[in-house]
Amino acid sequence: MTLGQHLLELRKRLAIAAAALIVGMIIAFVITEPIIDLLAIPIMDIAKEEGRTYVGLNFTTITSGFDLRMRIAFAIGLLISAPVWLWQVWAFIMPGLTKKEIRYTWGFLGAAIPLFFAGCTVAFFVLPHVIEIMAKFVPAGMAQFYGYSEYYDFVFKFLLIVGIAFVLPVFLVALNLAGVMSGRAILKGWRTAVLICTIFAAIVTPPADVFSMLLLMASMVVLYFAATFVSLLFDRRKRKREEAEGLVPGTV
Image (cartoon, rainbow, N blue to C red; front, side, top):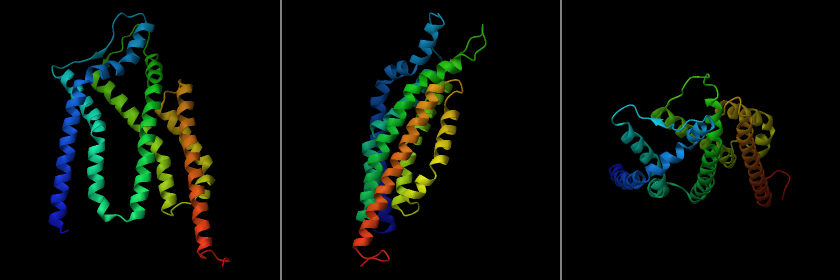
């Protein structure tokens, strides 16, 4: 294909992806009400503990409610339309990949996507503890107002950061398959990995919430050692294949 044909193909793929995103956003916009109620559960629980009859997100401008629903619709619509736009991206780049690269790409996506959602799930269960702990730092007699924009940004970024953190072990396996790092090299750095996981968990979660920190740290450490185990298996299989082909010194 010429450059012009590639650009036309890209435009076609982008148009289909954009249309799928718009349809996903329309569907998501309809269900924003229960999603907002779900996100507000932590602050409602805090209000009940403090004996307050009502507490909720604060909307300070005329368009605040619509703005929040559009932001939620975009995020959820992106997830709903993911099968379509991911396929469009894949269909555009696949012709330029070898069979081996295609197999590795499918393996990467097959591991990364479930791990990302697993990370978001863990973050969602940790989130109420984080908000509850942080609310206790408000001085006695003072009121804390939850602005809708700041609250949504905090929840969205928290879910996104933890979700991406759960995908990092897949990159270790990818580096192993690319020959950049061996399984033994990954295993050798386990002390540093555990320290990094601990520091990351301590930064993301409040200092007073030890349970959430340990839960997040333990999840990341388990995934690290799982990636190490998979890398060692790949190294072993590669070594056996080289021995069978007579590529390793000392073999026939």
